[in-house]
Length: 345
Image 1 (cartoon, rainbow, N blue to C red):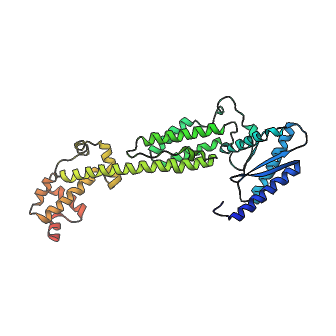
Image 2 (image 1 turned 30 degrees about the horizontal axis):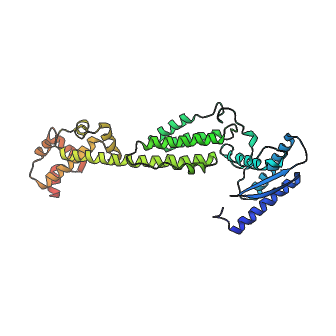
Image 3 (image 1 turned 60 degrees about the horizontal axis):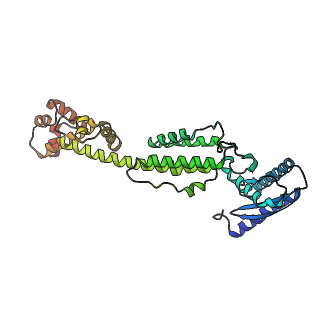
């Protein structure tokens, strides 16, 4: 907000909002509203003697009126926490704490909501309702699999499943935050343990600033999935480049021998599957294609710099006869070996 509006604008916004809240309170009874810091207001509403249920309904009606008015006329998204109804001024501080506590449940309810604290009573299971639409352990494993597979879109789909928790008011926000934070640290430690270069884990204070599921979903995508996939991709490419460099150097050095992918990788102490993958990812080619290119390049050099016959070149490069070599050379270069020697030497 401060990036868009001036201090004067924000002052008048706060003043206008306080007047709206005060007017709604006065229409139902008597009360007071005060600024509570960080864009928040604290309102106390006193009513004529009535049943708690009636008073609670009146409070909710007033809060909904305030929310709807602000949503329509002010550029804000608003959530309103409502404490329990009490009959004694001695509990004003406790009521204020409950209203603040109710606001924290934005993680479950979402923004632009009226959130009564009475809707979030402990149920004896540490805030975990039964059954939940998702399993955090399964989600954690799914995300680790998708990140290791470098599949960003699959990871995003798994994260979007968190949206099914929206509106489950029997979930304690503390429990949900702890589950999400634990999942984040487990993912970071599991993926980070496979990285050659250490990666810093997120700071708990940063995670605690996430107050809605939408914020958690966005954070998980940008700061967990994107970050970890990027780290894994970079290390993977570094490894593939190193393997490709080793393998291509070996091919160039031994291209006069009867080379095979398996034997070449064994000589370099590399799995054949990794060597095959490295050539494909780095050079977009296969072992046999790269070997052919290497042999043709050596044949071109010999034709221009030596007096070796076509038959001798063919034999040294593992061709069964000069005709097969000439046919392959023409297909790769465009002209037969003899033509090439006359034209370019």
